[in-house]
Amino acid sequence: MLAVEDFSRAATRRKNSRNLGLTSLISQEIMAARRMSSLLSSSYAPALLRSLDRYSGRGTGITRFSTTAAALEEPIVPPVTVEYNKLLINGQFVDAASGKTFPTLDPRTGELITHVAEGDIEDVNRAVSAARKAFDEGPWPRMTAYERSRILYRFADLVEKHADEITALEVWDNGKPYDQAARHEIPLFIRLFRYYAGWADKIHGLTIQADGPYHVQTLHEPIGVAAQIIPWNFPLLIYAWKVGAALACGNTIVLKTAEQTPLSALYVSNLFHEAGLPPGVLNIVSGFGPSAGAALASHMEVDKLAFTGSTATGQIVLGLAAKSNLKPVTLELGGKSPFIVCEDANVDEAVELAHNALFYNQGQCCCAGSRTYVHEHVYDEFVEKAKTRALQRVVGDPFKEGVEQGPQIDSQQFKKILKYIRSGVENGATLETGGERFGSEGYYVQPTVFSNVQDNMLIAKDEIFGPVQSILKFKEIDEVIRRSNASQFGLAAGVFTQNLDTANTLTRALKAGTVWINCFDVFDAAIPIGGYKMSGHGREKGVYGLNSYLQVKAVVTHLKNPAWL
Ligand SMILES: NC(=O)c1ccc[n+]([C@@H]2O[C@H](COP(=O)([O-])OP(=O)(O)OC[C@H]3O[C@@H](n4cnc5c(N)ncnc54)[C@H](O)[C@@H]3O)[C@@H](O)[C@H]2O)c1
Image 1 (cartoon, rainbow, N blue to C red):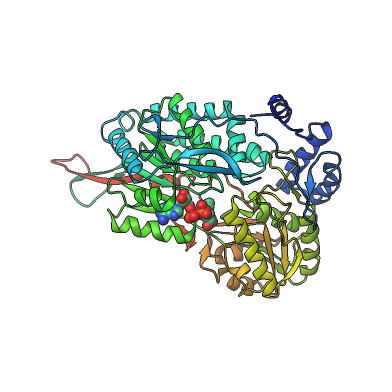
Image 2 (tube, rainbow, N blue to C red):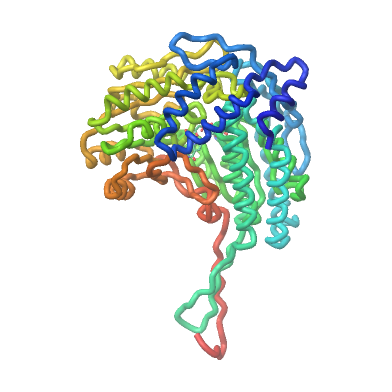
């Protein structure tokens, strides 16, 4: 993993590199304290953050959020070059059959990073054929599970070795803060692969008692060729949830990345071959949804589809899968998760946790705590402090140390978020802070807080997928349960209380795939994720993530003269 100082030195060495800012002891202390505060295990974390924020703006070039749109400095030159921009089919990097490419853009400026080969129907056919052959004839499903696990472990080691380049690519293509990617996402990516490497040789069926003279066993077989379609908000983490589980079970894969973020998946997939993965087992197609994505979802030779993305696209791919070969589909879709602050809450801690629950990753999280329900007894204090915290949020170049919030992914999302903000104002919610673009370049949005939000407003119903916190008031626990569940989504929920009975009541009543009590966004490799209602079906991560990549075959053998039954 790249240390803060190494990163600074590497970047400084690069031609034309700009001043990276904080490398001093103070800055490292700030980062360490920020990490501590993000754990929110101590009641003084918010106060600590506030005092550190005062230092972090000093002479560093970091722009803290202010209500006047501030101009950002020249973007920092990322400490990496793009090596892989073609499709990965059958172990080779190849051009698209059409020869077409598409641009991938830097969200800090909207400028070109590089052109990437644009996969289309013909490329999907080539990739599925390679995956089919690798499954039907190749060594991967035939080698021992232990051999497969060793390749997964070797891959994790290689990712660790190249963590600095991988982090820089992810930040450049996506706009997420470097610190977030380096300290949370890349380590979790590695952990996920080690977790599934550990499962590879522990997948087995059962021996079952039946009525009659039969020996009954179940075989847990790989399902075959898995198609995987992923979004742009966590390009590597969602890759890991899907690829790790599918490979541990012995499947082969065709994965389509999001058109906004094709780069990091190509880089890490090359490392898989260095780790010993046979050609054709993992194929990567960069390209667009309606062409490459739809071709994968409706392909007759694909045995399973795993999709993460919006609910609207989930409905499309489910239809395509049904109309083609009825391949089983898992769907990880959108959310509008309630974050419930009860009347006994420590307000300072609740404010910090609710802030991170919403603003993490520029608000571009499927699980974002995007309906902040606050009990009427602590509501006024909460709103005031939530506004103060949003004003302190450090917005700026994601490569700059100390930055908490980078740009949104692209101009489409940027415009959509600003439109939702306008609708909040027009519908009578109180705009406490923010509400405009940040700076004059790229896709930065001011951290925005609305109070007096009502359940029927669009900002309380739709997934905004941006840095917009909506605060709603409640009085009774039964009332907040009813209002929380009155949503088409059911992905996650957060509960903040010191009362065990209240926590237990809410845990069981909330219709959500994950309920976090006095914490939020805890994404361990072993913890399953998935949705109720229109947030999807099936589960990924953990042992549950294996189920959808396995076929269960019952084998019944007649017994003659058995010694026992
Ligand atoms: N539940 C989860 O675990 C989870 C995790 C991350 C993101 N998400 C959701 O993802 C969404 C944001 O991602 P997005 O904007 O990239 O979503 P999206 O649905 O627009 O795109 C997701 C993927 O689907 C592809 N796609 C688009 N149209 C397609 C089509 N017609 N056929 C096949 N594939 C198609 C895209 O190219 C992309 O690869 C949000 O709604 C978010 O909540 C959910």
